[in-house]
Image (cartoon, rainbow, N blue to C red; front, side, top):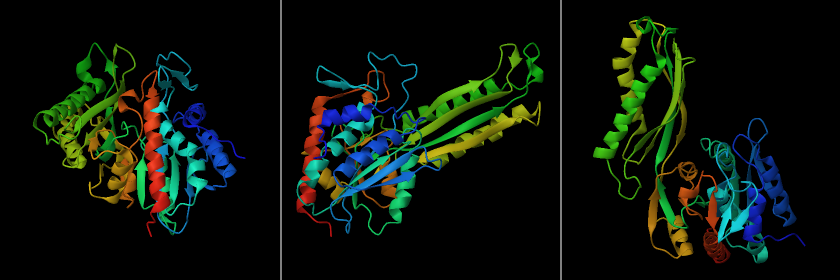
Amino acid sequence: MPARYDSIAMIRRLVGFDTTSRESNLALIHWVRDYLAEWSVPSTLVHDPDGRKANLFATIGPKDRGGIMLSGHTDVVPVDGQSWDSDPFDLVEKDGRLFGRGTTDMKSFLAVALALVPEMLARPLATPIHLALSYDEEVGCLGVRRLIDKLAEEPQRPRLCIVGEPSGMAVVAAHKGKRSWRCHVRGLECHSSVPQIGVNAVEYAAEIVARLNRIGRRYRDVGPFDPAFDPPYATVHVGTIKGGTALNIVPKDCRFEFEIRHPAEVDPLAFFAEIERQVRDEIEPDMTKISTETGVDFEFMSELPGLTTAEDHPVVQLAKAASGSNAVGKVSFGTEAGLFQRAGIPTVVCGPGAIEQAHKPNEFIATSQVEACEAFLRRVVDRARTESDR
């Protein structure tokens, strides 16, 4: 008889794999593949170009119809520099909480779905349940794109999708989109005692950052606003900056990365065009007065489409019925859901845990949230047992 896992035991198993995005996730993926195989459920692996990572896709139930996909990412953010009270890759249960990296974001959802596989197999499903596990979500939702390309080649693809990112088990039908860029300011080195003959890359980068901040404040103050989001406006964020070599050297280079998270009413390309115009018209000319070799280069990094699913869509109605709530919300963080929707697979977000706990030291999920997720997925499975999507 194949081994059975309750949800907490499965969370413990998945948290035990260090799947920080810079690492391979194959140990976890191979374990899940073997676990499913013990229950006679075959899996398809879709690897990255280097073969170091993989998505996993599996179907339980009939193969000749669309079905419901339960999706989540396997990678987690680093623990470097964070002060943990316990080993982040060894689950600790205390006072109704489960501590460990990925408990909230988002191995608990995957663990509950995997723990319920024996129940999914207990009697035939009229509608298939698909399990989708991806890699590199935390670094730009990279891996799932290869899985989506693979699904497009199949004669049948999932009809609906639930992405189990932490929403407190509330149904989320919309989230903001995101675009990010890298900026390289090219200056001219010289001794700091004669700065007028050099071009200070750090100072010009700081001016660009200040202009980005002003645009962000404008979104904050004048909108457009969507009160269903928190915050209810587009946000501009500079996350990294590095430049210079020594205090007495006018720096030659400075690099920083920035992003915009935006509701549907804000065009991210118009935002970028605005900051680029300011740089070309107002900042670069002052630099090139000293040297024509100086300037500013922008590099597009990544794009994550927003999610907008109509409240009357069947996937929203399914999630509402399974959650026992008529409320539908919006969130500011991005997920793979927007990519699934763009590929023609209607999607909602609904999963255990609070986003406020994600990416932090001593990340935890309440056991009550795990129980709520179990109840939710059991209702989804019950629907799959009784209703065919043909």
